[in-house]
Amino acid sequence: MYEIVVSINIGIFILLSLSLNIITGYTGQPSLGHAAFFGIGAYTAAVATGKMGMSFWMALPAAFVITGLVGTLLGLASLRVKEDFLAITTIGINFVMVAIFHYTPYLGASFGMPVNKPLLAGKEMSNYHFLALVIILIVLVCLLSRRIERSWIGLALGGIRNNEEAAASVGIDVNRFKIIAFTIGTAIAGLTGAVYAHYMTFIYSSDFAFLTSITILSMLVVGGMGTIRGAIAGAVILGLAPELFRFISDYRMLVYGSILVLMMRFQPQGLLGNDSFVWTGIKRLRRLRAAGDSVMERGTGHGKG
Image 1 (cartoon, rainbow, N blue to C red):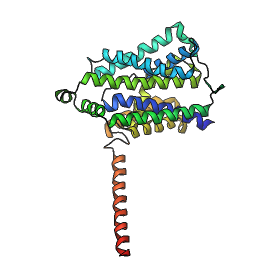
Image 2: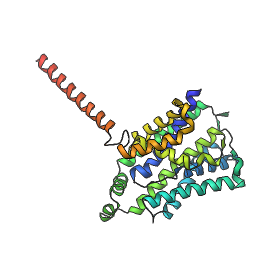
Image 3: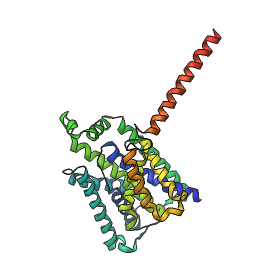
């Protein structure tokens, strides 16, 4: 059971890391307030099921759509700022949303908000059901991310990430594609929040605070921004770290911050980014193995002749 709980928690962080990858990894928009959208989805789903009588399965798409709409509006409001100023703006959004969660009586205010356990086939969902749901969502988000990467949307987002002015000069509507990335990324974070709320059965404003945003960003940076494999690897590594190193759990944010600084200084591509030393080494081994197989096939062919 312990392994199942840890796996669900890591799966939730994988979804958050993948969603931030669309905004920061693909488009190059620095977002330091991603936990705010995680919280909007969680509270939306909690209100939908607890106060409006909706089922969990209806609350999931509701959280996805509403968080995406909020992300679109906040993305529109942030269009005039970029780089460092955008990062500061997203931090502000995170603080504002946490304050709303914390001081709104309808949302439980400082006491937090209980959430009903969802039903599946008339019975309460078990941890195994949540694990299966998280895995299905990860697969779907990976397929969506891969589709974005290989489409003209991915080309446009990559152009904006590499050089915004150059992308605009060849006719790419920079603002439009920034909003698209922000909407998709925040909507996925909201969907993840809905799953988290019903899995935990209790949510509190501090669950979605700035420290959670830093944790998500650290996962993406460590794994490698701009790649699906990097987003997943970073979430797995930093998700397992607190379990493996419990003796330093009180210093978790210090460790995360140090890792973030070291990665940005010495390996900004992350562990599995396109030009990282680990990924470059893996590609070199693949080429050597392919060359060895080719030599063996030719040798076998000559032997038969």
